[in-house]
Length: 165
Image (cartoon, rainbow, N blue to C red):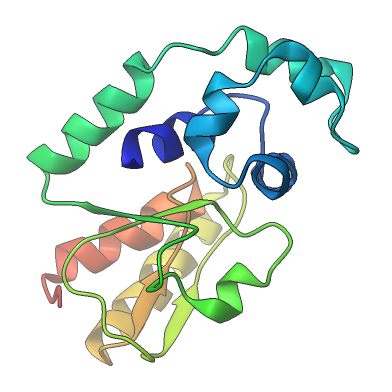
């Protein structure tokens, strides 16, 4: 269920590397959500700090809000286990466990990610916007985990360009 993917991806302090370690053990986020503390503590690479975070993060409210916002804005959710999740991205150690997209996914299409600092400079913002507008004009898909900062500026530029497939 998408709600559990959103839950796992939105836990502050749990990044994609830790999330994938949890997924290796439990396979699906719903099982992670239901896991007992001692089950989490037994996973190599998952320390006590992460177990503490997980134990205090059992609310689905944030995930439900994200899902509702996506539905209201015609944004689709692509979890890590979906067959359309780009295979080359899946292989990356720090690839996000959830991708968001607007429009239509085209299998085997070219995609480029624009990422950078959350606290970016004006120059960085300008370059991200220019690059994203150029890519959009060439019908090249922009891929990102929707992080704040440069990712957001790049995606906003693509959306403003208005050519959503």
